[in-house]
Length: 455
Ligand code: NDP
Image 1 (cartoon, protein in one colour):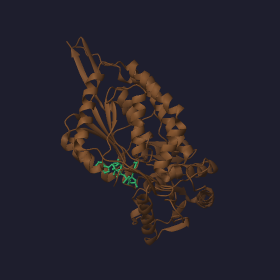
Image 2 (cartoon, protein in one colour):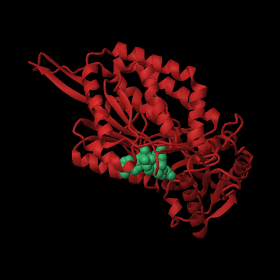
Image 3 (tube, protein in one colour):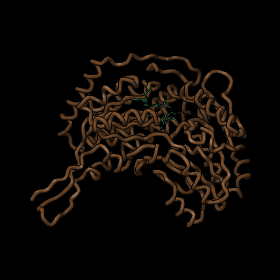
Image 4 (cartoon, protein in one colour):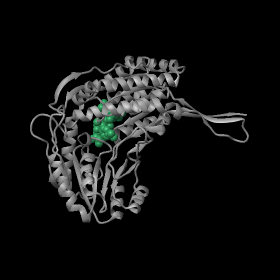
């Protein structure tokens, strides 16, 4: 895949970028290494000052930055602006909380005079990031990593190079020394040389399962720490005691966030038999009301899919689903004209044998399932290789507790759609990956918890 900006609203090529040469890549790694050492004397308070400045720039320039995001990957402009603002919030969260999270943890032992854990940065962290939230995915790594004293190398997705370069320049403008955060314009196959460099201490990847497997296999062989945030096929369970109107409106938002291209978008809707028909009628109605079109317009709900490849993969998934017996209640087609637009789609009767039953669907396509009771809802919710998150709707406290305890996922949200929040850990189990981002847990992934004993 070339490293290029292609507007997904019309597939016009805007700019092609030259990949870094091997020598230029080595120089950037050297600079990162030198900067890591030089930064060691910089206090947390000082880093917090830069981090707050970074937040202020993001807020001040949210409109221009949002336009860069929308141009490169097609998300509606209002959503792109919210993404930038969430990055600012996260920078402030870590500026405010890093000292607390990084504080030595005293653990008295009767034998030692002093015993404690001291948290130290690991050095250069390689971040391999996707295009779906081209700022947010990077900032949720960058803010804790830089506050902890690590330095970052970003290998961003090849279709969002302008976002990648912009983020590097924002970090510099905020005051962080040159080399603290650098973008490497590299194709995926060149990443293994970067990870293999002994000066690179760890890697974090957000993306697909195959990419995660490849990178984690290499990291494992090299004995380097890795964090993986991969796909999801999150269930959205609605039981009879739920506020149906609220649930169905949230269901549409939860499926269509980012034109359906989100790991934590609700993808499988498991609806109790007694409310299935009412839910389905209203859900289809609301999906049909979504405004699909120019992502630069403020009133657009769904933009184009980020790349032609994503559109073609989605088409193939729908085709395979219908071949295997699934029924389309609405949508199901790419839209006429230029750009990677796909109709808001609802499918039902997806057999367990259909490939799409087990796959992640990255696009505005909802799969509906009728369930007879809570047991069946939980069984289907867990019948997936993924385990990222789940949203479940019921006002019955006993049902809520069963859902919390029995759903196999990194997060369960009751009567709310799943969303990430800098104050709460984020990550999955099973094929959705391992490790956590955000909150204290996310910051500690790339720290050496050094045990100190003074007799
Ligand atoms: P990829 O996983 O291929 O891309 C994500 C990032 O990983 C990109 O920076 C990519 O670089 C890089 N990458 C890919 N393969 C390797 C490798 N072997 N070694 C090192 N880096 C690698 O996702 P796609 O864009 O191809 O999307 C495919 C599917 O993945 C989607 O339909 C969706 O199901 C899932 N996905 C999930 C995401 C999530 O948020 N969990 C995000 C994006 C995708 P490059 O762009 O140069 O290939």
